[in-house]
Length: 287
Image (cartoon, rainbow, N blue to C red; front, side, top):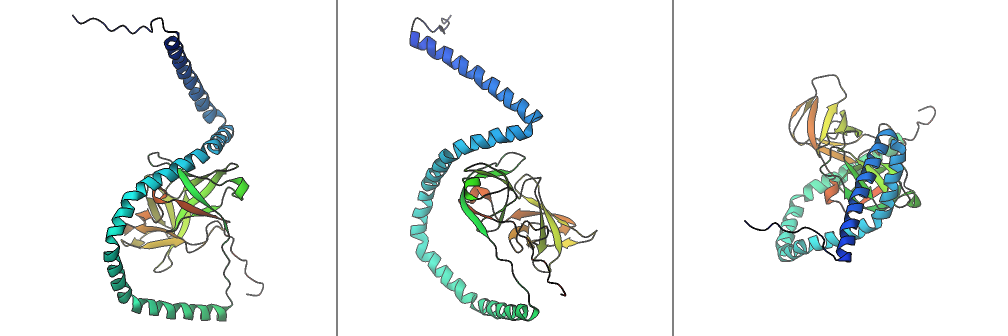
């Protein structure tokens, strides 16, 4: 029979102190975790304060690690782009030739729109960027969907401000710290965004599903049909999100409520822009 391995620490003081310290840290971790769990259940505002304090401390480290990880991950892509650049340039040249007629028509329509808006006396409200910040982390496996940016109250970020990416709407600010802020993503189950369909202006609601996708719900009663590929942008209703920001594309046809994919995915974003809340300009008297 094989001898039983001796698990005693022996007479080494250093080893004994190391084992003792390990037990102490394990017990301390369990106690702190239990205390935070109880605090989150009985005093959510105080727990949110502790959470933002921890985010304030860890955000600079997370920013450095995120930057290093993205640099390392971009090396294979840079090598691939180097060898494929000639083929891409040729394809882009062909695409530009094919879209020349479409671009000309778009310019004519834009000119007509400017002339008509001038005749009607309409005014646009200028969008006000507050800060451009890096997304240092986001939840990808939880039922709740949040992201953390490395800008907070010191940069003028406040709860309720919309967050936009290059492709479309990301979410809105829900908590702020001195140098960090928490973003409620549009795919979170608690997120609701007023939208409209681009092809006919039909109003709808984009609600998060918690799994990385959205539900597009018609605001009409029944029998509203959606097509695959229908595009939805913010409507400006509610005064929070600016109108015309891309939100989602329908993935399958249906009626009343359909599934859609968001244009902006936090996992693929490096930076996002925080803007001031949009407030529609009130109508002038007599109009």
